[in-house]
Length: 200
Image (cartoon, rainbow, N blue to C red):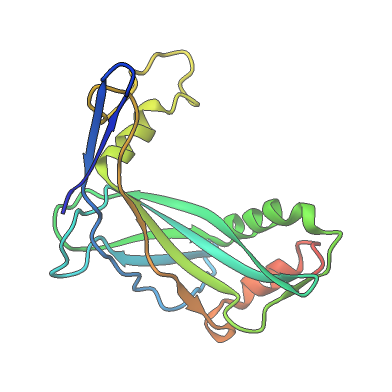
């Protein structure tokens, strides 16, 4: 399957085109969220593409943790972006990455620091979810080449996969979250959130 886009400027007659293929389905295989004593790090595993699945294999994957909570009795959530992993495989395989307890707690504190005037409580069911997002080669190249944040003294040419124009038409995908019950979540994470001074 290929998605195509065609944009025509009615005044100039200029036609801009681009195409991309969707990413194939992949699956998270980590079934507990446990941070081991050495460095308080958790290992996350997923398939880069499921067996017999059609579609592209992602070029880069990013792990994130979704934290669900209540604000003044109303359900809310934040996503904490964590480790990134570049895929070097051209066929189905298992990929792994590690996330640290410190990074998860820091991300929660940063995103909730403006909510301390409200009543924050933990949800009673599925307080955490794990997700892995993927992008294709074009999006990876676009971000890598056009990001001059850490290289402001050197010029990087603009990447574009748009014919007769400038921009990006690419595919990304986020795996359906694996929802963790309290029994499947490390006590260090629960106690760490309560110690952040946010009111939990």
